[in-house]
Amino acid sequence: MNKQPKIEIKETKNFVDKNELNLWKRGFTPQAEIWNGRMATVGIGVIFIILALISQFS
Image 1 (tube, one colour):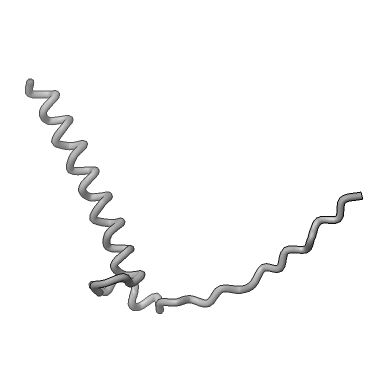
Image 2 (cartoon, rainbow, N blue to C red; image 1 turned 180 degrees about the horizontal axis):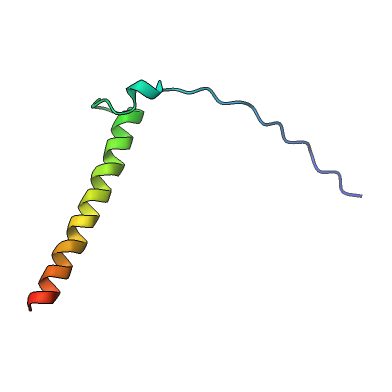
């Protein structure tokens, strides 16, 4: 009989208030990571649009 150890799940606390998530903070902050992800998504979208336009007109 294999007895598996019980896993305790601890409740995590919010490190950032929901009102502060959209603030433009510099450094290694959760807000900076959110904005980095948003800007990366915008950049990828712009690249796809440029590639679509280039392939259409060439």
